[in-house]
Image (tube, rainbow, N blue to C red):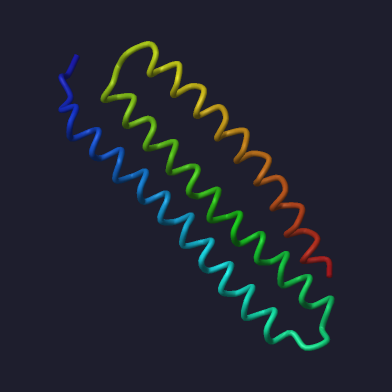
Length: 119
């Protein structure tokens, strides 16, 4: 089996995880900025504002989903660096939790997209 450079793989996994974090934080900042703009410029358009907020939720959710998927990649890279059974079990648990979160978040986003398109 190849002897991987553990330090390089660890640093790479940290960079990938920080990228995922940056994507999620960017999504939050973008959503908050759009929400503030929408709320300050809404006037008396209640229904339109509701649809705009739902659109913001869908967009924010897509950033969160992307971040979660990239975090799974970071965990896989880290597990290659540390090849112990405990790390593999931990990786399996983390991937399972993030996959379940991603599945239900995607399901909710799909229902919101369908609702927005109908109105």
